[in-house]
Length: 132
Length: 132
DNA sequence: CCGTATCCAAGGGGATACTG
DNA sequence: CAGTATCCCCTTGGATACGG
Image (cartoon, rainbow over all chains, first blue to last red; front, side, top):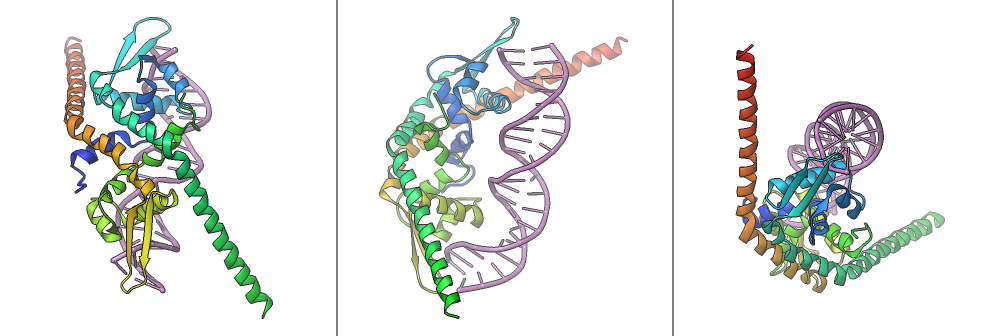
């Protein structure tokens, strides 16, 4: 089903890294300069932003325009192909808006249970020791 | 905009790793056993599958049921919360189906151009050397 | 301003062997 | 069957310095 060469795998592989989706989201409305993108995407380094943008350009999702001025100015924008990704990404964003708190609640419940089991184990251990 | 603590970032962080989306896709219709999942998701190791399933369980997206039989049998299924992810993931899958070939075409065009520029540089170099 | 080059630490993840 | 434990390589990615 999910062979490495099926379209789903190849498609998801484009997008499932740390920064790609965020970079697309940051450009969704209008072209952005490199420094603007770096400011919009909190925590991304120049290295990773450059790398992500190059990959997106190579994949035909982003257009890069260099203005030969000093200091340099480079503008990035989504290509028509790139814009086709906005809708599916919005679906994920909307899902996050709606459900992320339930996920985080589940997570802390799970961890709480872990702590409780650990607690019980410790109590059991202590009782065992004191009865020796 | 895309602060590390905004819902979008927190949501996407759940999903943007190598295996999470694929694992959810593999379970979308019905519960699956560990070995079935490993067979469905080509290339995943036991280590990564275990790790991914534990994370999904912790996040409340997957339910894990252990049957105390020999040999062991464990069934994984999506929780109601997990099922809310199917639609957005399908949107990505459909995008892949429709556009992945355009992306790959763009990619090979880009690489071809790179090779051409390299070719030109080499030619220029050779001409320069031979004229010395 | 928009990168590239280099170095380096952390950890992701495969291979293998073992267990209930 | 469904994991866990250990080892270890190698990639990822941050920090820094430099260049057009």
